[in-house]
Length: 318
Image (cartoon, rainbow, N blue to C red; front, side):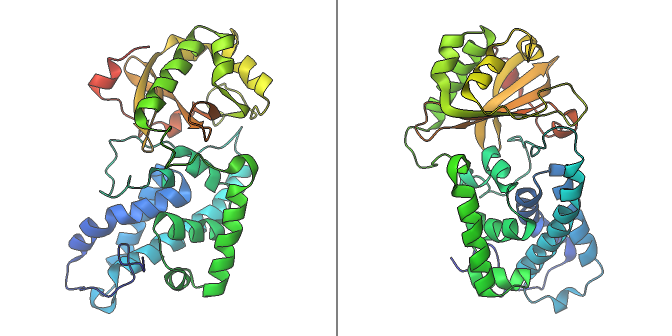
């Protein structure tokens, strides 16, 4: 693809600002959320971009879509560079903000679920801002290197190097994400695995939980200093098992109503109190689709505002 779906070809600009907003708002958000991992910041970036367009003569913009992409990416890079310093003082582990299925997203948002999955956003945190920009544009939006270079103000060869470096970082060791085309990882089998996990978790069943864990599972929790939780990642199988079957840790989760809901394009778990989401647990499966590789527990209330449970979901209790 040569940017034809997302943006470099010439197009008519004989439209109003409102028409541009309606046409490219979701596209801008799709870039910003993948870059920033937070819904609020992504929404702010989109708003800022179109506020700036209010002061631009639209007839001077030969390619609105590419122009919006460049404005979005520039703001994201600025935010990421400052956010890296802020996250150094973040209390506990920082995880991306989960996004529910009821969000107002582009029609093509979930065509490649591996490019928006929660695990994918976590992996992107390993990259430097410019590496993340190149990787997102290339992998998630399938831009040509020439187009990426134009958007980022880099040379084409530099963009190729940045992409190759990013691929090496993300594919090394346990960082490699689950294979999206593995037939064993379909929605039905995923739900069954979630049910098995929930049953084992609620029953403190050591044997059943052990059967579900991958060889080197990882458990990460984000409370943001607002809620008491596990402060450091647990990376040893014995430790993760003990954590998930302990009668002293994570006890509040067992007091909730547990439901399945779609988060970042995949069925995950939400924990409700009085019908409101208080925690989410996103699982990354091992490549075999039968074991759980990573656990991402979100308990920070500031990052749960975009997860809303439908009535039919809330009625399903484990």
